[in-house]
Image (tube, rainbow, N blue to C red; front, side, top):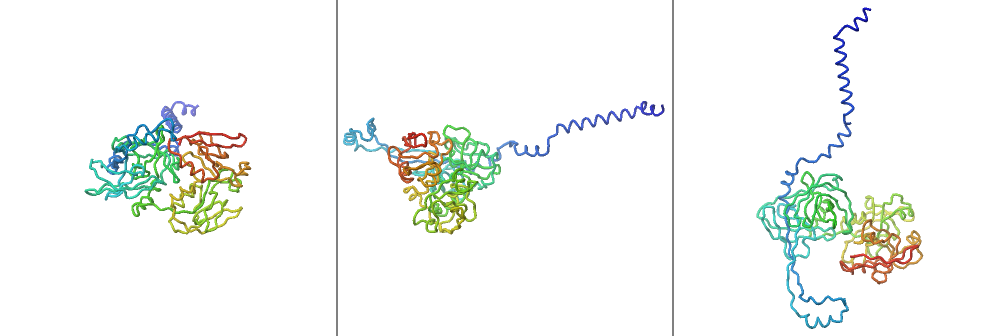
Length: 485
């Protein structure tokens, strides 16, 4: 009874017990709603910056407006185009009576953007902004205007370096590191869209390594920072104000999709343009194509990494070193070749005259060669169709001469035409219905016997004209697809 009284009738113990229970309940409740440390850490980088004002103020003085003028002649002969086409029987008549009329000169004007990389007035922009122009005017943020001269152009990467002679030192932007940027990272674009000077837009890195069919060195940064006509040549900067890309292209009709040249690709090109006024690239002298899943399996390369040599050009470095068709190039100077496009980039970035180590797979055995690189001659390559087998053109179609391996792969017996080895998704070729394994026999009624024939015929077709491909597809017979160039 005494024990019962001690437990029942001591009010101070009741109060202590109630307080203890309340404290425990609060602690348990808080622990149930607490965020794990790993989740809290993961959310931190997703915070939107409170303001981009300081960044915009820091970068804007180095961004310039570029206005160009191109003098052209416009003929006054409005009658020369008729429903009869090139064989119009009245052409001679109009040529006789109207052909001697004087031509009227007019000025074609365009707008673009650039950014200062040196206090002495060196400015980076796009090749397509200043190429073939008669006058280039640069307008600074403070409205000062200067005439600019072209230091060097590189159409292959759409980069240009121009220069002005300023009255004093200019504010220059620092080139950052595009290899280090991550998808989802904040970026800012500054330019002159539609002539609206120093327009600032922000967004994130949407993707890296985009191939859009603009040239052999496609490796674009994709961003959703708004980019429009007039932004070309402007900088894409990170939150530190360093340039990570050069805004270059947009998707026609697309919203929130823009592309920028990675600054790491541009650095070496800018340096060559500044020092030499042109860009020289290494040349191996092979035609290549990517290893798709089937080819990789056929050659015993499960990961599909490497580039298949489809042709070796006589007298060029690879032929002199002993590389042969059907070799698979695995690495250059111990740097792994991930794809045919990767091989093109590695060789292009190598010095002319440099001797490189080339590792290939031949008949299941690894062989090593030492190749002294020559200078890439883009005009000669374009005229002969060389090196086009491993790269998709504007239609997104990769073609190859019909080889024994491809005949076995696609079940083909004949040798006529060229074979489609890959079609870029969502490209013109893909939308038109071209498929891997199709054999292209004719282009606009012209017989096609080789990749060279195909390349030359396609290059002769003008922009806006129709392209008809006469195809032979296994189990379907002959087909015709139409595309617009």
